[in-house]
Image 1: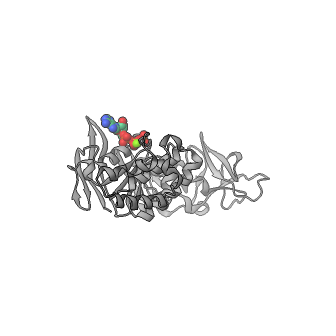
Image 2: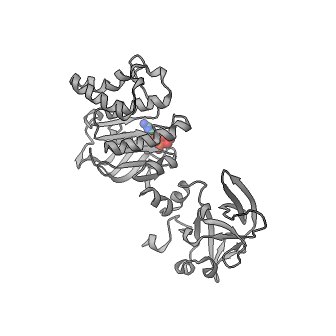
Image 3: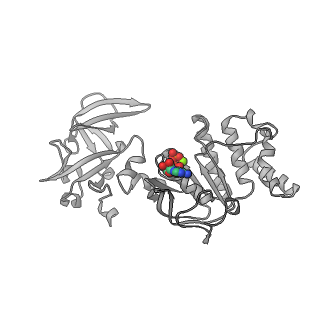
Length: 362
Ligand SMILES: Nc1ncnc2c1ncn2[C@@H]1O[C@H](COP(=O)(O)OP(=O)(O)OP(=O)(O)O)[C@@H](O)[C@H]1O
Ligand SMILES: [Mg+2]
């Protein structure tokens, strides 16, 4: 096991910074998920921790020891990629024990370890078969078994489930999370799938444009995004983002004539005092339909539609279309107003995109 520290890590390819001044500590035994859009630097970071890419600046430390100059094989890491390469002419069993044989480990020890991973990954029948005879999900399981059989200090996983069918992926994800906790191995898992990140991670590292945006536990990432990017990247359907303009008596919604007020919408005092334009972030699950004049904002409602068991609606502010969840027992009848749950309101600085709420800014 190992604690991994990145200290002001930058990785450049020519004049391009793929990773820009990243600092992070992954605790011993922790499951950290790197999340972010395509090209933001996730794989490059992982490859650098593995020793496959050189740091241009900064340091990578394992348990406080600098490993920048160690090769991949000197680092005691195991890595599994999106597309697994198993040796096609070797059986599953031979594939799994290959790293141990290559190191000259004693036969009895190999047999003991094989029993262990066979048990953990429930690999009974597969052992005698060849990789070509297994579905992709099972091959990925074999790759994981091969990765952990030599007790790596660090497990690095780069979108290991993305090549697997949706239905099987769910199950694999659950097994993987369970396995990691059982092994207690420090794990860094890369994905651009937020659902995967939310369900697996002890902590999520959200990256964008080669930098870390936020490091948080999954629920904090959802409820307390540090900026507009984090708010919109996490959560589905996506967080509504609405311009707020300070006017007499409230905050005007975008280009509309409609104003949020401290009385009806429980706007915080500091937001009322703000002289700068803000952006309101509010997730669809915190926006409802109502007839109640005391809590409902008069905004045109376009459309009410069902997705599975949930009923969504869209409403308009100026040219913008936004979404809410209709929680009324019976959808019949007109509900002319939109209620924003005060607890669900997030405020961002319109110029910088950063959270402007008092407690976050503090
Ligand atoms: N060896 C390289 N030479 C030049 N540029 C590279 C190299 N490796 C990566 N890059 C660039 O660095 C940026 C980050 O790439 P990286 O593979 O880390 O992204 P990622 O976050 O893993 O994205 P994805 O979700 O698509 O896998 C990309 O713009 C990529 O083109
Ligand atoms: Mg990648």
